[in-house]
Image (cartoon, rainbow, N blue to C red; front, side, top):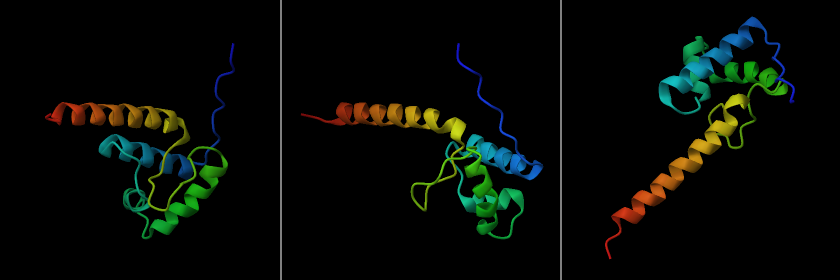
Length: 102
């Protein structure tokens, strides 16, 4: 039997940032940008989000960004996003095949 995942020990503010990220994902269906999180949290600059994300990355709560424009992805949702992207790509390929007239 496998061990249950460890609960992350977050500060109150870190938990608020994580809740904002999850709320934005629920509202938009995609990982939020720094600017979106800054707006929800009331920060004047997206750089303030970066200051809060660095400790969350170290704790494993969010994934490191691969590219500058990537959204903020909670680590717990990474596998779900990859599977959803795979399914979406397959559906798109299927729709293209249906539209091809020979």
